[in-house]
Image (cartoon, rainbow, N blue to C red; front, side):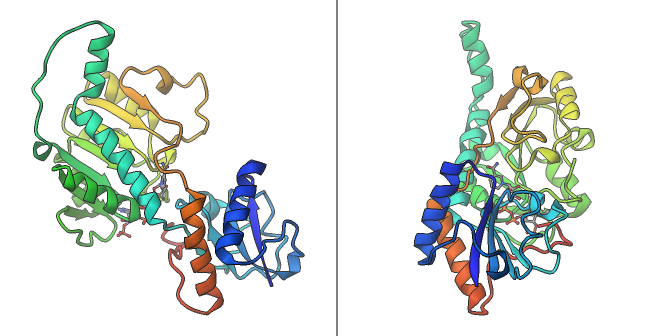
Length: 307
Ligand code: NAP
């Protein structure tokens, strides 16, 4: 049996992945395998129809943490287990990005940059980190590591997850009531949820209305979580102070999108925590080995749950 790498990544990037995966696995990944021999597919944005050509597929390993587009792929065989990427180095990178932009908002970066543009010398009261309440939606691999780093910086951190499972030093919430409780107590909201049918469009007018006036929003998860028109309205009417957006429903973000030039939006081109093939390859190889040995694999996705 053999492994196939299914991806629409640019050729040079795909070649780099192939080399690092082959090294970590200790075996070759044929560029054009006999489809009948392929039992394991390693996938990152697979070409349309590639699953249909593999009649003996037994295991799919995503090279990305988010699997929303794979779950939505109608050609993905429903009876073949799918695992997502869990790379602690990626969670570190996400936590670094969250800390960077939480600190920027906390230190009133957008306001001082606006003042600089107008040559305004004006000092504003600076709260302490403990006085700044950070609410994190999604307390999985990304959310938990981000919470840990924010706590180390002295921020007051709350989290919302499906189960509300305990996370040390974090006030945890679950369910609709829990979400409302978190939002009313949040100055900076950080979205790190997977995109599922329950979470699509969650960042909307209703949610923004539950945040205190002057709150800010960071969306580092998926563009589909955000109702952009509702965000623009909440920024324009002054209810929200600022938004940091890394992910968009359409990527690259079209040049005529109003988010590009909004004074209260910091825009990033989906760079919060890119997969690093150097560290990801080790996780993928370990999962492939576990699968072949009949041992439990990490990051198995529950399709009905959506993550
Ligand atoms: P994960 O480990 O699967 O964690 C998901 C978290 O969301 C869990 O805490 C889960 O609750 C919670 N959750 C799921 N559905 C929920 C619901 N309906 N209500 C409340 N909580 C819910 O995922 P992860 O590795 O942290 O990644 C999260 C997302 O980040 C990915 O799906 C991806 O979209 C995004 N991401 C973005 C970038 C970037 O560069 N911008 C990079 C990496 C990842 P339980 O704990 O109770 O299960």
